Length: 311
Length: 288
Image 1 (cartoon, each protein chain N blue to C red):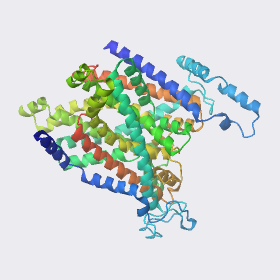
Image 2 (cartoon, rainbow over the protein chains, first blue to last red):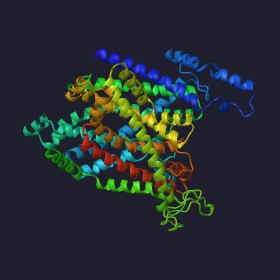
Image 3 (spheres, rainbow over the protein chains, first blue to last red):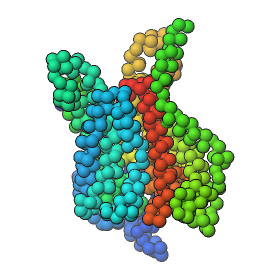
C-alpha cells in the first residue's frame, strides 16, 4: 500500500514535469506579451528593457530551467499584468472557485440521489426513462448557453437576480445552477448504475428474505453501498470543477481561478498561465491519488493495484 | 451457419430497443448537413441592414419570411442554423476521428508492447488529462492561429488521451488471451497480431467511446467559439451564432436561443444513442 502510494506520487511528479514543459513552450507560441504591455510607439530600448524585466531575453531552455528552479522553491513568479505574485492571485481565485463548486454540489446532491435511486428501483419503467432523459439532458446542454439563458430570464426579464460578479448569496444562484446541472446529471447517472449493481447482489436478496421492508432495504442497505462510487467521484468532481468552471466563471464574471486563467491567456500573462495550470493539474493528480486510496478503504473488495488512476 | 444466425437474432433483439427519436433527430441533422443549400430559405451570409433584429414569426414584428428572425446584421437565423449543421458537425467529426484514431493506435501499441514505451505514453496521457482541457484547446488554437484546421487539431489533441487510456486497458486484457499467445508462438509479427487479433476486439469499445464522446466534442467546439477562439466568423457555426447573440441578450434573445436549442437537441440525441449503443455492445464501459 505505502509502496503503491509512493509509486503513484513519483508518477504524478513526472506527469507534472511533462506538463510544465508543454505548457511553458506552447504558451510562448501564442505571441509576445511585449506588444500588449507597451504603448504603440515604444522605442527598441524600452522593448529590450521590458523583455529583460519579464525575463524573455534569454534562450527558451534557460528561461524554463530558471522558472522550474523557482517553482521548486515555491515561487511561481510575478504576473505581468498586475505585478502581483502568482501565488497571491491563486490564493484569491482558488477559494472563490471552490466556494462555487461546493454550493453547486450541495444543490445537486439531494435531487440527484433521489433521481438515481428512483430510476434504479423502477428500472426499465417510465420513471426510469424520465430520470435518464433528464440526466442526459443535463449533460447535453452547453454550460455557457444555459448560463446566458438564465441571465436572460432572471436578470434581464424578471430582474430579480444580479447579472454577474460575486457578493451576496443571490450572486451564487445562477452560477451554481449552471454548474450544478452538470453535477446533478453526472451524480444521478452514476448513482443509478451503482444502485443497479448493488440491488442485484445476494445480500440485498437476503435482507428481503429476512423480512426487511423494501423501503428499508433500498434506502438503508442498498444506498449505503451504492454511495461508495459517489463518494469517490466527489474527489474527481472538485478537481474537474475547479478547472471546468472556466466557462461558468467567464459567463458570470465570477472572480475564480478559471476566469483569471482565461484572462491571463488572452493577455499573454505567461507566469499566471503556467502557475495556475500547474497548480490545477497538481490538484487533479492529488485528488485522483486520494480517490484511489479512499476507494480501497471504503470498498475492501477493491484493493489498490487493479484500480488505475481516475477515469 | 447456425451460430451466425443466432448471433444475428441476438443482435436483432438488442436493436429492438433502439432509441427511435434520437435516431430520427440525427438522421435529420445528417440530411441538413449534407444538403444545406437546398433547405435554406435565405442566404446565411447576406447582410441586409434594413432587416436587422427581426423577431421570430410569432412575436410582434416578426414575419413568415424569417421564421426564426434575423440577427444583428439582418441574416436569417434559420438559414444560418441549417448551414451551421455542416460546419459544427464536420468539425466535431473530423476532430473526433483524428483524436480517436491516434488514441486507438497509441493505446494498442502502449498496451501490447508494454515496457518503457508504455510507461512514457501513459505519463503523457496523464499529463494531457490533468490539463484544464478547454484551456489547453484555447491555448493551442491561439498558438497555431485560429482556423478550422487548428480547431480540429486542438480538440483532437485534448481527446486522444481518453481513447488511448481505455483502449490500452482493453488491449492489456486481450493480449493475455490464448489465441493471442498462440499467434505469437506461431510466429506472427507484433503488427499482425495487433491488426488481426487485437484491433477487431477493441473495435466495439472504440465505437462506443466515439458515440459517447461526440456530444462533448460538439459542446467543446461551441465553447471554443464562445471563448473567442473557435471556427472563425463569418462561418455560421452554432457556437459562433451563440456568442454573437451574447451582446444582444436584452434586445434580441432569439439570436442565441435557437442555436443553443439545436446544439442541446443534437448533443442529447448523440448521448442517448451512445448510451444505448454502450448497453448493447459494451456494458462494462461505464462513464459519468
